[in-house]
Amino acid sequence: MLSTAAALAMLWTMAFSGSGEPVPYETAVVRDAAIVEAAATAPGSIKPVETADLSAEQLELMAGDPDWRASARLYHAGGGGATGNDSLGCRPIPMRTVAVDPRVIPRRTKLFIRETVGLRMSDGTVHDGYWYASDTGGAIKGAKVDLYTGHGRGSMQQARTLNMKTLTIADAGDFDGCPPAWETASN
Image (tube, rainbow, N blue to C red; front, side, top):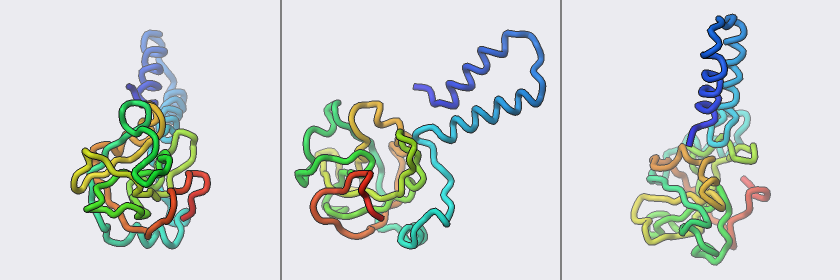
């Protein structure tokens, strides 16, 4: 699948390359800026993080040494991945639930994943970096984590840049009950 920027660039090339007319410099600059802006606001892009945008806890977690480094994979409901409830008996929360090897990262650990801070979500919001270790999986052995993206393969687009990457993960405490939904999550 093409990224938004690649699709816009291809459309722009098709629309203007065959005209044979030169394009004024100012017009080219405006078009290029529009392509860059579209790419920067697309789901899965990373918003530059300003320290003023982060809480004191987030700043501390960003600056500290990570507790774990783990290779990330993505999983979703509806394709043989997540089915029903997670290993705690809770409904998985998109872009919050993490499946872990409990011998490495204990379940019920609130995690702070630096690489997800500023990640643009499909609904336009920006991720704050907090995730919840509430699931396990047979294929998760050792320093691996599976990030739950939501329902359907399309939900993975917003986090595709994280797939197969090594993430820096900090222990942000423990949680009781089920992980909070995105709208009600607290830092």
